[in-house]
Length: 120
Image 1 (tube, helix red, strand yellow):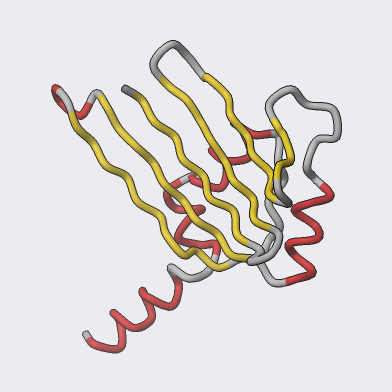
Image 2: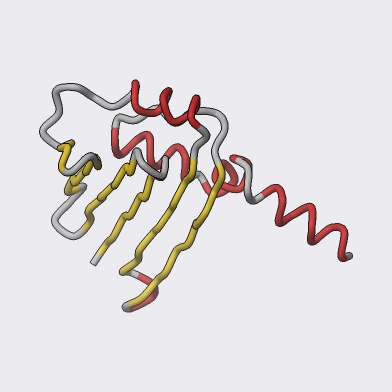
């Protein structure tokens, strides 16, 4: 049992944990990014609130090694109204509907991507 738990924890640091939850597809679909095959999942949480969980937040934080981060940055759209660069970081904001929004922060210094999707 202990070995199984260790294997599960290890697998969640790879892309498999995100693929099971569909998070990678969600990030790509909502942002025009193409995620590299290899990254470490730092955080992958969902929080539901409101009547029958009608309000929710999805937070995903990914860390990349240098070559995979370079690949991620090459997929960043050059001419997009949703992306902006400020202070070395890249910011993405998009309203999916009146009550649902997506925001992404890419931090090149630490090679991190933070994805947040909220429905209120």
